[in-house]
Image 1 (spheres, rainbow, N blue to C red):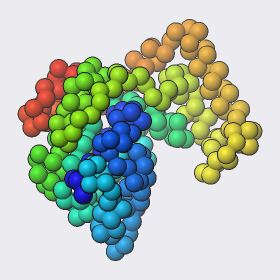
Image 2 (spheres, rainbow, N blue to C red):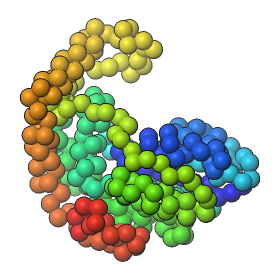
Image 3 (cartoon, rainbow, N blue to C red):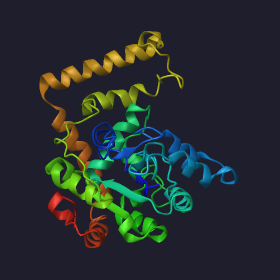
Length: 303
């Protein structure tokens, strides 16, 4: 079996584009768990320690010897939207099951990834303001904020991975490179795997988000109306309150489009993030730049 590729995140770094465009090339990849590998969460995140089975994982990945077994899931390094951080366990299990794996991690400017995670948090029913997610319990011993800033100190994640894997088995790439120069981004993955991979067009946003105005309304409405844990197959079978909430959110989107005020609302949220992270990531980004040989400052990272 060829060394597997494990695409481990981060969330909100173009994973959907990679899964739908790059990883579907069946002349390169073998994806027994699908291009979004939910079985990876089952094995590496959820399985009880006494039931974790490295041999079963390797057996599942066996396929044509000339293809790269693929595991891809953006939640493998953590799920900040739900305040869940478990990267150390996942890295340990990956090393036990797939010691020869190639680990691909996509990163993104910290202010942008924090904002995108906040939008996802609200879409999934969250009710707290951004300020609270970033600062609540920040200085309280034994606790951490919902959005842990150290989760996005990417040099720490790189060190965690290279504690278990050789440095040449780990590749960090900025999402901004994919947007600016998809050919270079693809070339680096191809070189990493020693394969020929077709270059993809610059990705548009795969998951359209609501305007900042609409998300602000949704956050307030989430206090009173939540989608059921098991949503019905047909939208019309959702509770009336949920459908009414969705109509109000769509109306807020239309108002934002009409008055062109989305950027003003976004600037306000970005100011909140800027105050919370001021200078926090500078040294981390410099260290990672040195290690991976990519000047992150050229892509807008604080350094």
